[in-house]
Image 1 (cartoon, rainbow over the protein chains, first blue to last red):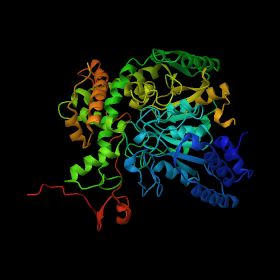
Image 2 (cartoon, each protein chain N blue to C red):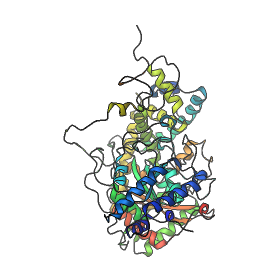
Image 3 (tube, rainbow over the protein chains, first blue to last red):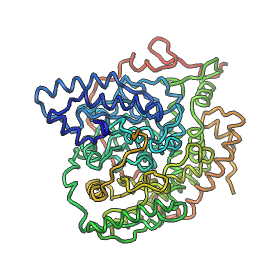
Length: 490
Length: 96
């Protein structure tokens, strides 16, 4: 049976505005779902039920005055635990920040919260957003609501699982190499990574600053557009934030795809792509064609080098960003007597970081070190130019590009945990968009033979979220997929 | 061929204490990852300009106006150790 927390944000907002339900009823529904499913999913690191009820009660008082409501007001929202929340523990899935309580809110949450969105909790994720399976969380893995023995994807796996299971109506995540789109694909929800700089990074605890992008998990494309409308707009606190005020991305959302030029990325159907995934994506392309889009073959000739460039650029930036965890101003400090500050810092970082974070800091430190900088980091930055040129050329012929989001559906927990290269290959189709800064979205497009969701990735030119969302919305409406994870059937 | 790296040197630069087991595992794993990553050299030609930011913005300035800053107590609240209004750390300089 469908409960309030199973409905999308637009439906709930309409009911709230019409006075058919109260914010407290909506939020309670979500909190009850968390209690019911989270012992199995482990999607939340810090649920905030008390705070959520208080906020909902305040909102109901405000609402009773007849004041107009934002479309995000009263909607149960989850935040990936890399987004700073004033007074609420923010761990980044790391032991090194186990007891860290930020003294400020990040801009993304400030904007949602200011419009009345209700926080139901902070979600589990790979440590410092480094991972594709959520197995790198210092607090244990998240389980996929479609099959508890499988991963939800990563690094924003908790946010994806929470939205798929009705524990939150929507959630924020972050996408540095696919960390919103890939878990959205594996959990059967909509995952939007907007243009680099579209949503302020202020208060997003940094991993790789030239790639990090705040993104959304929703059950519908319309909800993604609604959230982006509130989250977008320049923020003076982030110098990389795009110029201009927030726009209403729900306008023109249902204008359809007649005449839209859709390019199918030829390089994204090669070795390693599961037949079920390739088939569902090809069927999605046929569907778009049926809706009046013109379809052709597109090429990203250097896509094959994107993964190599990414695994130099992202760790390099991470090695610099994560230098701040030194046991001095915040976070964990290794206990005991230390000979000097360097010994204290080295012991703190050795004990506080998990294996994947150490791997990436070491990789980045090496790639930036004297004698190797030009050979690795410098060359990777050149490849980034090639990827950007690939997209520019492809977008001369097409308005949106289509590929699978991930080469596979959800895999078993533990299956790739000991093989970093195999794990990194999960992001082969999502990484190019981060290197080029272009917006991309993952939309559910089917179920494979094992009963697991498949995601379709659409990509548009820099700043053109409008076309991206319109294409995604038309596809979603035409497919009319109504699915719920088996976990909720009982 | 996996890339050979001086893992102890890199760990010192990164200020990370590694156990001998970690050092062995990382040496092997980083060697394989770097071998794959080094493929960027196949296409990164001399004349190609590097890209640092995908959507570059230049000269992002704001008015230089004083604003309230974080109160001292707030700033120190997450500190592992403090002395008065300062962060406390083990000695930094060599003793003479």
